[in-house]
Length: 447
Picture 1 (tube, rainbow, N blue to C red):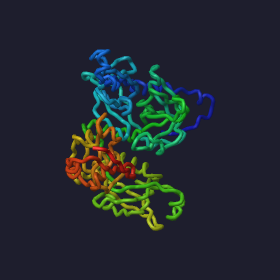
Picture 2: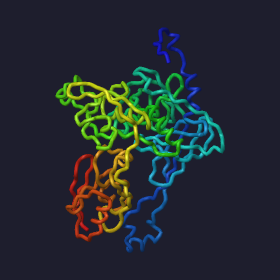
Picture 3: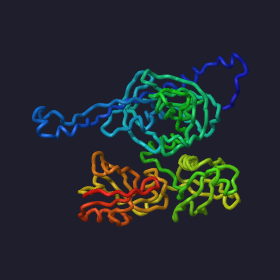
């Protein structure tokens, strides 16, 4: 696409209408009805209290919660991509998708990926064909390019706003595990989540995901997931599986100004290797602790999040060229994009019984499990929490998915088998060591 700055009043008066006519029919509304259990006060369990109000008063009741978002048709057979947070639910959900022409269809969730905040739906259209948008190469965007945001803000109906690309590769936003966002000043408001960010060719360059706002409304700082990431998730859904992400086999940290200066770099850009897995691709490519990864297939790397994004969008089964900085010298190496290994076997188990971890599901930590949970602990071993049931002992303890159980009653925990053996020993109290975010917390719980 040739970029031309308007040079006359007539050029400035040109309309976005042709782009909107092409893209708008592919943007849909996503309605989600969640069935949830309404919480009940502990007073209702008191026999004296129930005597006056009746046995049915205080019985947990189902309550319906409704949520609204936007989505984009990306396949003529009725495949819709939206944000994971639009359809996220702790209970049973009914999803309805409304098209721009007024038609409505029930939809089935075929893939949800919390790490990228994306979800893929399939319309139950009985063989109907639908308008579908084409993916653009989001790497071709430049700051200053014109874009349109299309969605359904506040449920008022489909709305189009215009703006420019304000910034690229925003990685310190805190929205999802894979941060590499397009920033735009096109107005994005609640309800726009999951809608389309399109270029002047009417092609999809991003999925509108979040805004920076102190009031809840648009302040001209919106963020979209790049289409190259969206394409990976959609392709995974169409293949009927989970999103498979390439495994680097190394842990990374960003460079500070002081660290960059001590290494002899002229600026704090790149991803520094802090740990290398003995059986990972990074080891095979010759990476060492202390190396700084400065480029990926010729593209500059600013921080670890940018490198993760490049790896994920590259896909499985290819090779990439990494630019490295080591001991004052720059050189290149080639690394394969492969899936993470599951060694040791996960041995996933649900914990029950009279212990603090009851209600949690745990597994042996491996590179595959770490990738599944979005953890940056390559090379570590132990037992990791996979899931926590609400109102369980583990939930009351404050346990979260991704927590590492590193010690119980002064015994180091290295496997699920060892943990279950320790939990079977009766005790009057539990001394626990839980690692979260690289910090170990010591807790004591009565038995």
